[in-house]
Image 1 (spheres, rainbow, N blue to C red):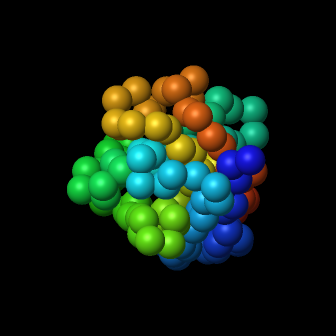
Image 2 (spheres, helix red, strand yellow):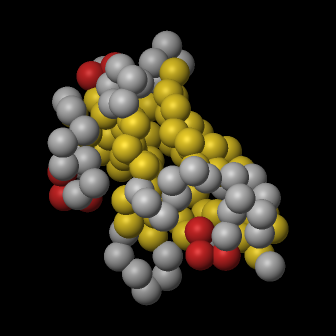
Length: 125
């Protein structure tokens, strides 16, 4: 059974930084594009960023461009999300996602093959 396990969430002041990690088990990790989504209370799940299977291509949402950086280590089966200059509106549960193949349609949650359980990120003023 495939598992994606996130870690690194927590409470941080506005302007601060956090790094999220997501490690995959029993997954042919290097065959999957990986992404991060987030969901705030009362809102739909929102795409944050994605990285291709090779790690050569990234695709951040406009709302996080220049602040968040996605990366991956295929040997460790881990994807990271470095979040800098955090804002109050970044508060959400962050989910790791895996999509077999290319990044095409990775921004659509309906195309995701596997999800992590989520990790809470809370930004305070």
